[in-house]
Length: 85
Image (cartoon, rainbow, N blue to C red; front, side):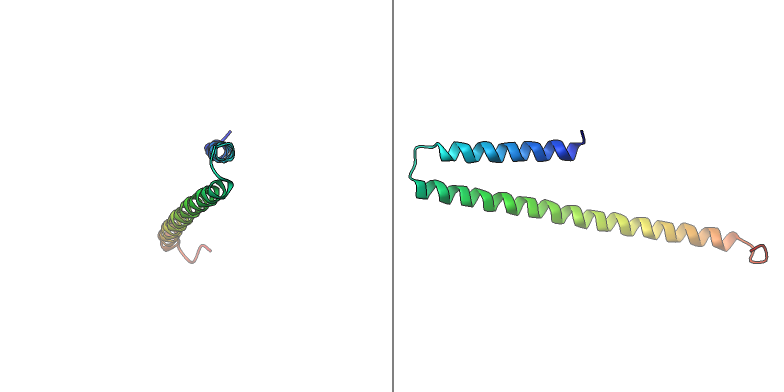
């Protein structure tokens, strides 16, 4: 099992546990629903931030790889004698 699935499972389990704990808490329904809504928004914001960071990191790595590949291609093609091709 990869680490991403484990982390997602832990987060989902924690969210489900928190939601069940709130539902059984001795508080008014309005307050409980408001708290669940706030926690959901917080979780959504955290996930959105993590996704955005991952996308930016992936774009940066892809750009670096493209630059390295282009540089290597230029190095190889500059050493090749055009008469051979």
